Image (cartoon, rainbow, N blue to C red; front, top):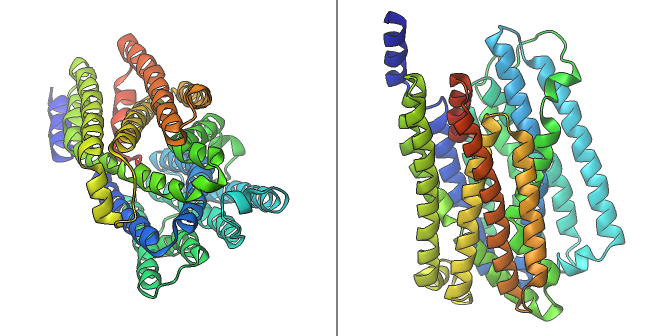
Length: 447
């Protein structure tokens, strides 16, 4: 009884997973500065060049998190496991650095080859070959940043983790303010503002971090590969599905529709505003979930997870209503009078984004309960459904990818929901439940 009482006292003192507030603050700064970057870019560039800049944005945020986020997660897990055993994590980080460098070099070679031997520069990047160079730079800088974040997470340096996220967004935005004020209209300069900040932000976050990588015994490759394959493909599939509406619109657009795609991109970012709201709600709900795990109230915990899903769905509904009513007004207010996208488009984009947020939340829960393969499969099903529905829907460019996005994200969410609740109904241990809360609390939902 005394031990149980002490556990409850400790749970009351620390109701949130370690790092929730630090990571949440970094996410909020990153989110606000992302919108600042997009607003200034849209106002300063022609619509064609803005679409080209966001082709770079999408490739960066599909490839970098898709490839390097799993490495971050595995580094964090491996270093945390070593810390729990009193073993230094330096060798793990060095192994991961070699692997990350190999990934970056391989992706860079493929990117350069695709830029030279395919029409991607003229079609997606509006003839701006410099944007390919920005993409190559970004592969290395984001790889470095995500590896460092894995080290921060494994060493419980979540303040540094949050600083990294917030500093990246801030360093990205500041030069764009100068470029826009100076009337610079070359998208390559804006692309450089996207490519270099990760390494600068990481250096800022590293300030004052002592004994971050203490020496320890050599790390075999197997220490990083527990679920790396599942995580890698799952992360890559998730990023592809996240940006599937943009990718679909860019691939299917005719030369005369390139400028209109810029408005569609703005609509896609507007539809993701609910992610910021979800981050705030998440911080409110997590204390209750953590307390339930600490006190052994597993039935109440399962109810709490269901309530979290209901809240996520509710935020998605609010996003759809906001897109249908206020979307065009907010778009013109933020991005200027040249923004042109209707209520229906914004409502449908918001529906797809809401379902994606739901799927991502469920994926975090599945991964925490060691369902890596199930999460990967669900993301892949979503991509297949998106592709089929988009191909079979009518000729209207935006409508077909919007319907495809809703169908794809909805399919992933449905598959994950079924798998998660089957696993919860079958019963899981207290350690797995605690891991679930921490996964949801500290795994960032980035825009």
